[in-house]
Image (tube, rainbow, N blue to C red; front, side, top):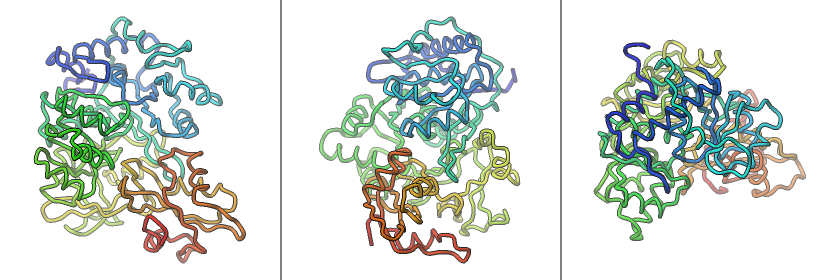
Length: 506
C-alpha cells in the first residue's frame, strides 16, 4: 500500500475511529453511527470477496436514496470494485444500455424496481447475483444477509483507481460512462467542505438523488466532514421543510424547483428554514433573493460537470451575482480559443480544467478520452469567460455539446431529436432549451411535418415519454412550415433558438 494513499474507503475507516458513536446516516426509519456504518462496510467487503469480486469489477445499483447505498459504496471501495449508480428515472431501454455497456457482476436494486428486473436482463448476460435492498416476495438475495457476513480485509486499492461510472447525457444518442476515481472524489469533498466551512456539526439533507454527481458529492463531502447525512427517498417540500427545522439541517443542494417550493412552505408557516446555512446549486435570481432575505444562510453559485466531480467553481451569490463562482482550491482553470490558446480576461472561449478533480476518462472509449484530454487539459465543451477578479461567467456550450438542463438533469437535444424522428410523418425537428417557470429550463421541439400529416402536441410528447426517460420529453412543441438552414443544408440551431426560444408558441 502506498504510504500516501487515501481512498473513499479510508473516509469510512477514519470516521469509525474519530466519530464512532456519532450519527452518520439517518433515514425515515433508521439511524446508523459511523462505527456501525464501518462494520457494515467491512461485512459487505467480506461478502464481495466471497463472491469473487475483484478490482475493476462493476457493481450496478438501481435505487432511490437509501442507507444501503453508503455501506455498498464503502464495501466496493474496499474491494476496488466500480459502482455503477443508475438513474431510476430512465426508461428500461436506457437502463439496458448502461448494463450492456458496463457488464456488471452484481446488480443491486430496491423493491420498487423489482418488476423491471426480468426485462432488464431478458436479452443480455445476467450478473452473478441479484440483490434486493429491502424486503421482497421473491427469492432474491437480501442485502440484510450481507451484513451478517464475516468482515473482509481491504484490498490494495490505489487512490487513482476508479470507484464510480456515472453515465452522462447522450451525445449523438449514446450515453457515455464517466470514470471517477477515489482521488477525484476525495479531492472534491475536501475543497467543497473547505469552501463552505463544513464541520462535524453540520447536517446535509439528501434531496438530490445519489445517482447524480451533485447528490453523490454533497453526501461524500458531509461524510468527509464527519457530519450527518439525512435521507429522503422521495422529495416532498413540506416534509423536507419540517425535517430541516427538526434536525437542524445546515446544508442542501438545489436544482429548480426545490428551493422555490421550500420557500413557499416557509411563507405558508409550515417551516422556518432557520438552520439552513448553505444552499448550493442553480436557481433564478428572484428565488436566491427570497432565500437570502430570510437572513440565515448563503446561496452558493457553482459550475461543474460529472467529469469534474460536479463542483469546480463556487462562490456565495453575494460576492458576484450572476457568475458561476471562482475556481476551487484544487482547480486549475483557463479559457481557450479554438486553437487552444489562452484567452484574455473577459474574452469568451472554451473552459478547460486540470487538477485532481478531473475524471479518469470515458469508459471503454479511448479515442474520445484522448480528444477530451488533448494538450494536457480537460476540454469541457462549455463556453465561458473569466473577469479581471477571477470569477467565471458561463456563456453557453459548444455546438457539439448543446445541453438542456431541466431541473438539473442533463438532456442532449440530439437524443430527443432521434426519438422524435422515429414518429411517422415528422420530416425535420430541432430541439432547443427554453425558459421554464418551474424547472428553470425546459425542452422545446420545433417540428416540420410531412404534407397532410396531422399531429397534436400531446401525441408527440407522449410518444417521446414512452421511449426515453420522462424528464427528457418536450414540455413545449411547435409545428412550423420550415426550419432555418446553414449553407451546408443542416439545421441552424442558433437561428431556431432566436426564432422560437419562448416556451409557448410565438
